Amino acid sequence: MNKKKYRLSDIISVAGLLVIIYGFAVSMILSPDKTFSEDENRTLQTFPRFSFESLTNGEFAEKISKYCADQMPLRSVFIDVKAAAETLLGKVENNNVVIGNDGYIIAKSDYTDFTDADKNLGAIKEFAESNEVQLRVAIAGRSQDVLLRYMPELYPAKEVSDGTFAHVTDGLDGITQIDLLEPLRQRADEGEYVYYRTDHHWTTLGAYYAYVEIMDSYGLEPYPLEYFTPEVVSEEFYGTTWSKAGMKWVSPDTMEFFRFEGDDAYVTEIVERETSFDGFYDRSYLEKKDKYSAFIGGNSGRVRITAQDGKERETLVLIKDSFGHSLAPFLAMHFDLDILDLRYYTAQSVSDVIAESGAGKVLIIYNLDSVLSGDTLVQLNVEME
Image (cartoon, rainbow, N blue to C red):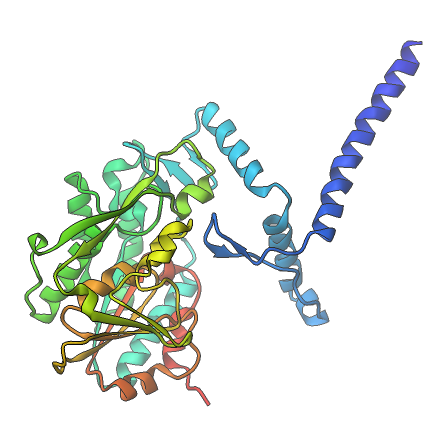
């Protein structure tokens, strides 16, 4: 009798396991692939195209692995459960996100392979040598580089950050560099709200302090902080770090626009979409998860910002990642801007854009993480047909 009970319980256990395994498999097959995660604000891996070359070089297997992770049913639920379990076990880190002090959660990435970084740094130097423009490079620190005050005790954040920044600085030897790390780190040490608690970007206040350093580098007078009127546009901003961590109990951020008289007289043009709007902000994004894209309309290949006062102004070509979004309104007070995001722009070469705009100044503003991963800056030197 007992043997039959044991056999029946074994059968039920195995059957239940098979239902779960095959249920998830069938669900993945029948469900249409999701192309974008609004929670994580990133493109998801769809089913990769097969070829014998991709199979033999390992690319197909790598993409299949990413595909299974990205398209797994109930993925966000499992991320949340794992985060809660890790926290209950007393761990201060989940999915490469560190639980910091004062409500901060901080994405952590420790690069030891600088292959991509060296490609990007080499591309910048090649670009400087082949273009007769006044080039400046400003590398924005990651949250883990700037928010040392909020990192857990005994975590070697400063040593890791300083060593990585030294590699980048040395790789740009001979290029005019604008130090944004130390000024923003000092502000953070003093308790100022310069980076979001749930996102990897700097706040509008952080972007303002970066603007001050950039203007000082150009020998121009920045507008004082008192010139702006902060407008709270959301008190429910949950950023990409929050989504990645699965720590749903963390409180949201506050997002602000720094307004000034006449700021709606500027026009922001999204070139590839052939659309434009007055001012610097697309407020439709404030109703979405990705509220940060309210700044200049989010990720686009090419954006122009011009003043409509009829005065002739110098054009600055701004080559940026998303850290340039909240910085652009400040720069637009001094320059007409031709903004390129090399992750998305392929219509012309950068040299052709510079020639077309008549710009004599080029500013590259990239977050350190963008320099260390990927090779988008190689696009600086690609010639288009």
